[in-house]
Image (cartoon, rainbow, N blue to C red; front, side, top):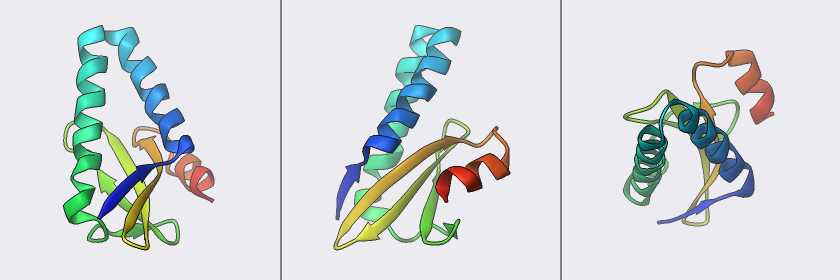
Length: 97
């Protein structure tokens, strides 16, 4: 399985990085490492996660309160969003619409 991170998810990742950068540069680097590790796991696990907001699978990050939303198309996991779970569920629903 291939994994492709779309531009929308890259923007989300950058937003999360900036948030943690304000806390500590070490935490922001760890955030990126942790999220990329979760995304890398999709090579083996894509498609097994529950679906939310229609046809998006949701993978919860192991180390940070973030959810990775993706779809599987033609043996490729397309990552559409990386959203902060501390935000309103209504915001996430609207973002994924």
